[in-house]
Length: 225
Image (cartoon, rainbow, N blue to C red; front, side, top):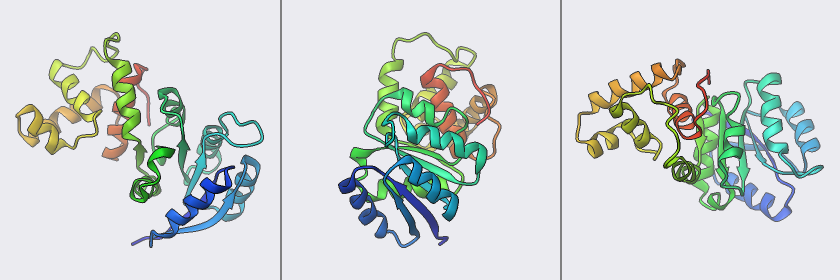
């Protein structure tokens, strides 16, 4: 099992210590540094070059969107470093901002879910491997917001849109096949068609699923992830 080197940033001491305790339980995660604000995180990341940065979405000095902006900066300066953004906000726009410049090696996790150590660790492992992770509660919020909205993916067939809606609930291909009463092979073909029509041509299927969900739920134009 490959070891994942992680730096952590949160301005709340109690939250920070709780996260340290959670991550210490994972045998394959090594915490190489802890920061209390955005400036410390930037310096720590530059010196330690971790595999993954876990950061609060808001930190000093401005308590705005430091975590999101840091993730965006790293995309340009150190694309090999993954980022998991922790947030107390179940608002689609924050998650969309994290994934705006690509889903690869990016994750978005709600703070009220990190009490489940497996949830955060799963996100870190996915991001470290070049994949993506989006909290399923965010998907639920997006699905509710999407209901009744104008269809921005009208070029998909009715069945493809149905499959994409099932993907957005977090179901696997096997589960989708069971729900729709079709074969797993049929769902695989639909997924391939969906990814192609949305312009999602990257090799990593996890990234493409996240990208497709975000495009479907946000109604934005497709782009490379």
